Image 1 (cartoon, rainbow, N blue to C red):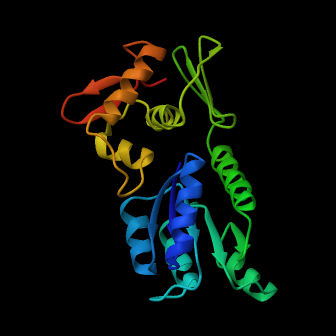
Image 2 (image 1 turned 135 degrees about the horizontal axis):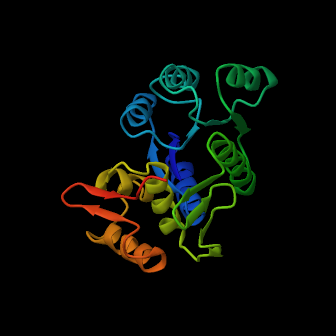
Amino acid sequence: MLILLVEDDPSLSRALQQALQKQSYSVNAVDRGKAALHAVYTDTPDIVILDLGLPDMDGLAVLKAIREKHLDLPVLLLTARASLDDKISGLDGGADDYLAKPFEMTELFARLRVLERRLSTSKSAEICIGDVTLDINSGTVQLRGEELELSRREYMLLKSLMESAGRVQTRNILETRLYSWGEEVSSNALEVHIHHLRKKLGAQFITTVRGVGYKVPQP
């Protein structure tokens, strides 16, 4: 799950990135509205956490621009503007949720889980390809009815491949779903995850397209 964090307070941004990464989210962080829009347009995240008080443009303007391109992209507003009118303005502007500062990390995590469930219900709850079944709601994978133990990144990698079954996913696309900007990633990290998945799913389930990326068969 890739989160774009838009927050101009450096200390809060660092704390949020660390807390979210401990929850196994990949997090890309920017501190300007224009940078946020560039990130959304070029490398669309799964969820946006958006501060309203940005130095270069108002967060509501950022939200409006996001909605012009991505109607279904979940956006959670994170802001010190805590009045009822501010909350109504944010929700009417297209936000999916609104969390006022100061807040508890546990509440933020809970609200993110709600947004994840909404994402899941917009797609089929289960993806079945051959003997492999991935349940988006429960975050589990079964092989011939037996549940497999997968790491968070193995699950996210397999989910990305199965949601695009029959189509090649490039190395760059897959890495952006698994890792944050600036995160130190070994050159063979993706191959290691693929190797582990093949050991658990069978060597033929994930196909290597040389020089391009990977794919799984169509259902």
